[in-house]
Image (cartoon, rainbow, N blue to C red; front, top):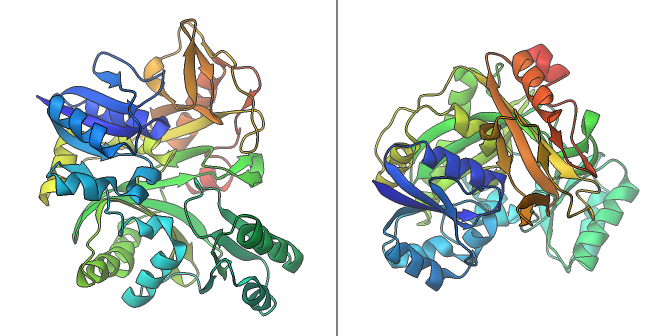
Length: 419
């Protein structure tokens, strides 16, 4: 029996903890710091800072941790994997240098260029190059995509519809936030996310998902960390998967190996199927949130075995359920800007608690309360997308949180038509 450590505190980490908890080979799942909704028979939360590497290493040694799985991007960009590797402690995630595939849009674009990976045409600018960025915008057609170059919790992207909006956006990012920017062409097509576990050039495909970034129905409102997701995508066939493997992942990973900086850990490719084939929107260096919460329940392969095979570069067949998994985020009123906090969370007596992943929650007087922008995610696995939609929205009727909201259109519209 093995003990596992997960770094992070959100819904993604709760889903990871549940996946390890299902393995008969895992005795205990520790989550640092976790949240008040996570604890169970096998899951225990530990209050250690996620970048306090010496204390984390000590915890790993004292609790005989077989492997550590990093959920969020911040400890990766701070170098937790380098630190653990230096002490020969098994850990899932990229090095600080390779984590720039997520933390630096310009770095990722550079690697893609050298590897001939298809992506949107772009130009990058340092925080001091406002005049150059503004002049470049004046030569481009609208809409155009402007990305803050750095970690922005999934929210540092603006699709500017007019030149005026584009100029205001670069001014805010470059002057007010002192951030470099990447300006790139606006691509049209179908978006999809592809998740893999990568170790050098060893790839274990996990699956596809689609998430919903905008706060409100009909893709209105501000960009968020994600308001819902579903998997699989019925329109994604083996030919599309092979195109992604051959034109995106294999050349990209071979390039990183060639440059002496092999990638390890989760590689999450945000992609678009354009009229000219698959193109990369962005890469993330960890599992997506909320995609993890709906993707992991579909994995029938023992999750501890799967992650162990990744670390050892061993082949393993990932068996996925043929069901459709769908989830909807319940968020606090005001999210993704200033949001309400402190509301009590109530479930109907017959609510199946295995169908919820907790994120921004705390405990007060023995009751769960809301403390984050995204409070929780309700998920379900059903025979098809229509059944999954129906089931999840029926479950949401059994969750009562004042000053909260959720999208009513997850898996609906064109998604339902294409399923």
